[in-house]
Amino acid sequence: MTDSLIERAREALDSAHVPYSEYRVGAALRTADGGVFVGCNIENANYSNSLHAEEVAVAEAVKTGHREFTRLAVTSAARDGVTPCGMCRQTLAEFADEDLEIVCDRGERVDTYTLGELLPNTISEKTLDDASRQRGEDR
Image (cartoon, rainbow, N blue to C red; front, side, top):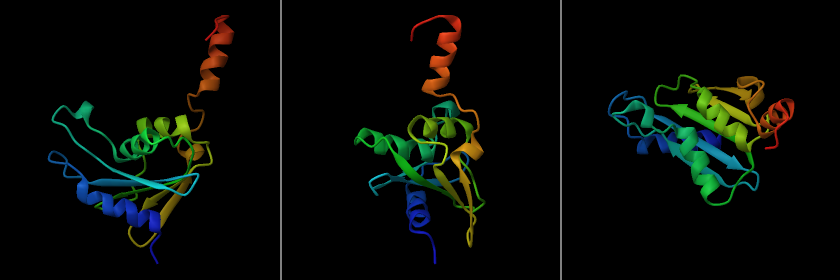
């Protein structure tokens, strides 16, 4: 039986805009109240302007007032166990604790991580406050 969050991420693959890499990625993000927001990657000829599936899902959730997440599923058309990139991990860390569960689709199975495993020692409001205090500044 396939995980329902993985299924939602797989459904998001159909909306991906990937004319350059042809590498479709879908993500499904569960909020603390049980809602699910999906995203897909959206490429741009200027690669730095491309959007990742995870950040699109986070943006969809945040724009409707959600700020607490419990689980993220990520998939690609290749079912290769793709994990969120460093930028997406940092975006997730803005809204989720290190125990956020991240499941990565490998077709017949999933790899499961926590955000803390994928991004230890993240930059956070606390680390910025600590750095300001060390410099004697008020943030």
